[in-house]
Image (cartoon, rainbow, N blue to C red; front, side, top):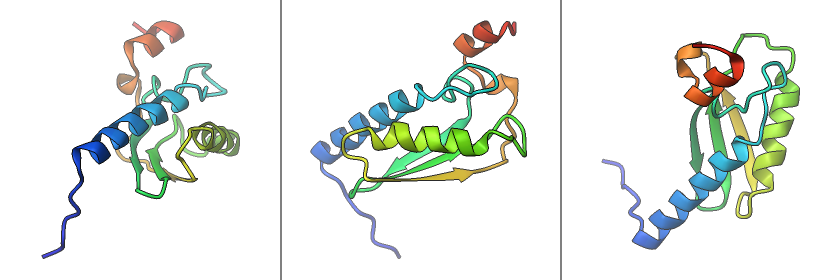
Length: 115
C-alpha cells in the first residue's frame, strides 16, 4: 500500500490559494482565434501544483492540429511563471474528453454569440 502524504490545514489553504491564482492567471490567456480566455472556453481540464512550485496543466484545444498551439503554449508559460511561487510549468495536451461548445462558460457563449 502506498503511503499517502498528509497535509496540514495551512498547506491546504496555501494550495487552494495558489490554484485560485493559477486559474486567474490562465484567465488572462486569450485564445488567439476566438478572442476569449482559455478558462471560460473550457480548455483547461485540470491544474496541479507540487510543493516545490512545479505546475502541471492538463488542457485541450478547440481543434486538433491548431496552428497556434506554440503561441498559446508560450502565453500559458508566461502567465503562470509570473505567479509568485510557481517555478516551472508543464502543459499536457489531452484529446479526451473532446472539447465542444458545451464546455464553455455562459460568459464565453455570450461573447461568441452562442445561445
